[in-house]
Length: 391
Length: 246
Image 1: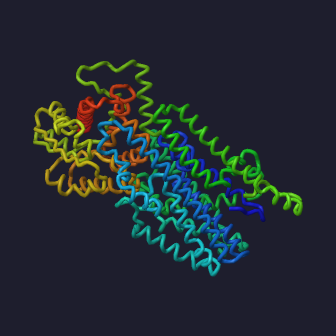
Image 2 (image 1 turned 135 degrees about the vertical axis):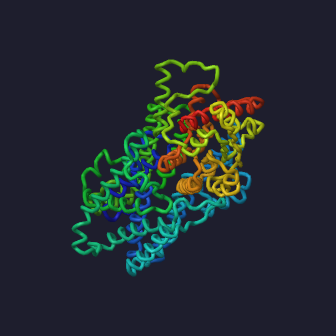
Image 3 (image 1 turned 180 degrees about the horizontal axis):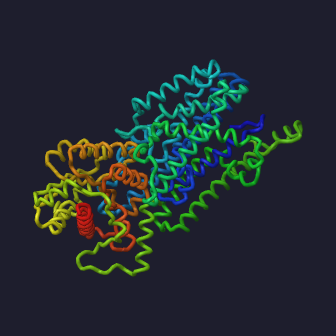
């Protein structure tokens, strides 16, 4: 998403980078480092962060295109991005097939022979591959990109209705979300009996509400029109909600490791539905958004510092780094099950994976910067300075 | 890692400290005592056993309940469980009925309760599940809600229930993420105060201690290996049930 004209909100890149690292760590089964990700102390996880920031930035970038260059151009650009995501999804699918076919053909365990049917779809490739191309076949880990692609495909309509009136968009979106919570509709997937893991009918609300916030910033609505009374309680309420949710979830995590520690409200609140984005996930997440937006200024110096730099770079190259993180977590899982999962080994695999992600992000950023060099020189001459790699 | 992971670590440390467990001629598949903690009771079964009345148990599950890999239903774990229970409780006639059907999801098994479980008039249901859900990548939320529906169904009929979690295999674990399903199954059990038999952790322990090697077996040895493992599972399960009716 090239955006050289205004200073970029590095908070978006930073937290998207953090989410990508968490996605990598959480996708490795039985990984002790996952005790230190959002999942351990939040009712939500990196998926919410990823979808929220994606919706927000989509509105920032394409909202500006809409204002500057009109609806047709903005639509073309959104669809081009959706196409890139689609290609990435198909690429990941091919890797998945390679991995499964290899494992299944080298499989000898007698007690699992009958049940080891992950590769059933290889028996009907004419159906499975077509279903994958239609985004209807979503093996584990290959479920969040289809949601993102679908959201981008409908995004031109989202943009145009936002321009008309925000409520024109927010109301139907919220009604649909509430309907899913009450009625539990889902979108069927392949093979029969499966549904979209990230139920788009529910998750659209997160994406669209985030887009609305992003659009508000683009067109310079100074403040979201909220009565002062609500404004005054918003931050304290967010702090209380988030802290309470953290406390409860943390108690569950500790309880999971050490049984005598009580899991607070475990019987009342568990399980919390992720497919349908339960309000128990959504509300504390938005509380966190309010807190971060209040407490961390977009000018914060630390965002430009060396510590934040690798994460910011990962967040800026999010599609490439996301695909890489999926491949790396599969690889890490393989290494840990084949060569032992001792704590030092786990640590080594995690550190190596994160280092590879950061290095790759740095290389891509470097390459893109060099690629853009002449333009940058011209711009620098005109404007005298430019800030960081604007991607 | 989670509670099961810690348990495993504790077991390994325990072994290192005390040396190998005393060899018992009785069974090749001892497990560390931490793995056999049973905090939940089976009140209906306990009452039956105290009264020395006939006991019917239904084992519902997937391919590892059917036991085809061992070659005969007599070698499957439900039958081994029946034999082991008969030794533990000689005064009550105990029957374990095998209702395994391969490759069914948890939801499909719940659909089978009305025809396969209730007509047998059991006092205990042993529900072995989760493998197909994990292998087929059924959503964990859906797996959880199906488990809950099944447990409610059985409990509402005043029948005791216990869960048996998945089988361990290193080569399977490489492509399938069992952890989320294991965590969900054990948490459902806890929330409902139902015992979950840690088959996965046990088999992993045996695999790591080289009691069994599940992944490199000569073709003609496979059925015999399966039979030995099913026998161990039946034996340990009987032991756990014994603790739950004390």
